[in-house]
Length: 247
Image 1 (cartoon, helix red, strand yellow):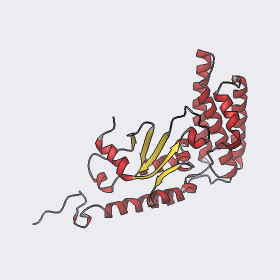
Image 2 (cartoon, helix red, strand yellow):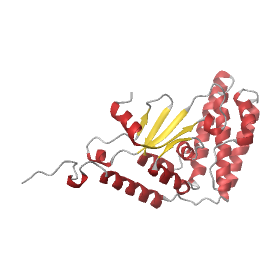
Image 3 (cartoon, rainbow, N blue to C red):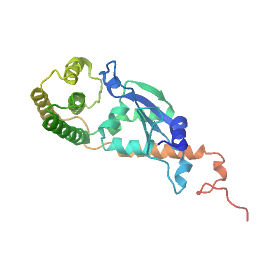
Image 4 (cartoon, rainbow, N blue to C red):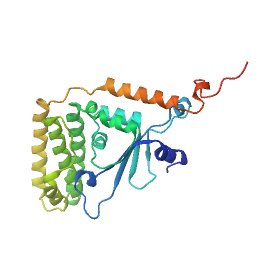
């Protein structure tokens, strides 16, 4: 359950907020939820206490999830698919100066590490689909659709060096999968082909082998320092966050 303090972090300190899921991918239908994702900057003085601010917050709205900036950057540097895609959402709801600087760094997070993380995530999801087929005779078709979308997005990222999450002309074919109109063996064939295309693209990808960690760390340090400088009474604070006692 979200606490009042956590809600305040999201409400008062969000630097970037967007819509993700089917609406951002161009796969929304009448029954689609609105998945909101965001990044908040916990004020630096909160880190001076024994109890640190949360690394993420669920809520306060339904289908809303936010990361603290440092955690978000850590995951993005590791090429976490969900986090990288969040940075490339076409549906931005709010962004401040810090958020704009974060978005300007999108390229620094992209590297060939994406090949391993995207494909590994896809393999985990595929095992779940195969378990559904064994137990129920059919997969969860919505999940199968999104797995195909993810593999195609990863392939194109590795080929071009750019991450685009909108499916464009592939929309109708993917929605046919969601409706269960494509037989499972054909879906498996498409997954296999996309997996092979990911491997081929990784071998000659224009992406660097590692992300630009130094640039991201510089941004994070500057942002933390600026937050500390904005703290009330900062000039008279000790490192503990208290005013020094008079002798």
